[in-house]
Image 1 (cartoon, rainbow, N blue to C red):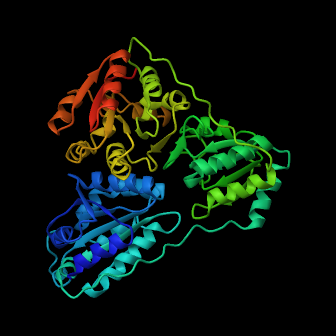
Image 2: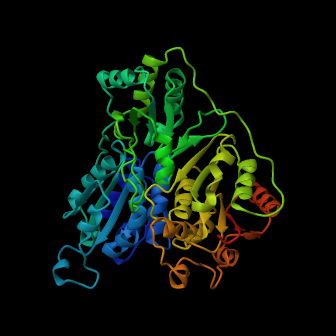
Length: 517
């Protein structure tokens, strides 16, 4: 076997069976090797940012990495924004970056760059292979590193001659590092804080937002009166009827501060310390209330669900979780707004759906409208780098082909990675995309005011406007093979969404919303 064939076989044996690819010349032997190992599914994406975002969605839903195949430094650079999001989500992800042949690098060819430095900015593990014989063992180590708790990006750099040289043999899988068990004394410290009688907040993140952990946390909250809060942008939140409900920490700092106000104990289970998303003149960046004591129950790499279960056994041994009751909004009629669109989605969201939410300002009403829908997963924009939603849906649909995927997408964000629609069509993925089309970067209009940029005038406003010309998302989708419709009333959106959810394969609905004030 050549190096590429041995690497692909090793990855499959290590549990990596999907490869999202936007390859180039340096990766051709890896591409050819996919034909020799049919257990590895190759998926073409037309832009590297779509490929990295798809690998993120796949990893969030399976708990194991997909590979993403990238071409040299520029290809990696094109994928960095969604690798940033994956890093913040702690997604297990394996980036394979082709490089020039080892003997060719000294000639400083036009595509030569510092791949190692680029990879290091988003990766928790980076290795460059210099010999074909070492490549399979490096691949096994990379897969293990990606899957080690809590999950991270592992980048393997493969020079072209390493992949084409014969004499390599596949390597055995390497056992990933498991989640660490939280010590009894840490559980006791959190229990003491909860029993103190002082106001406490239990803030959850990461796998602490999966069902078993939420049920344990709900028991704790019911027994002690602690408030439950989720991190603002969860990688994967299990929610809906039958699952304990949890409010997310608000995006706006002043609202987040109000949620935490009065707390004397903040107990973190898989969540980071709460900070403002941005700095604003005269407003605090650190959101922990003054005089509030911090307690870290579980770090991201710990067994978060186990720690919460242990805590529940100490402070709530006879308490049951409080599940969300089933409730749906009535289907609205009349004007289509962000609020009525959310009601439509809440009324029709199918059981087992995976929602990829990048609706941004248009999605403010979505959490409330969908809280009592049948059980579903909610994936969010973890790192704030827009252009994640459509690729995230790609990976989620490939990871869970038996579940419907709903991509809720702001119009400005959609244009960053619109080419993902082509992959939806090519792979016939069961993804329904709703574009919230208000023809504006509405969130930036809000931020323009909040940052105190009071002198902003016509030129500034024009940089946040998407109406000249208006983007025709139905034509864009149809041009890439995705059936598309446009809704201008709440009734039209309901009818179109019902039809799209009933038919297999991809669909797109452009929800025409009023332009922001």
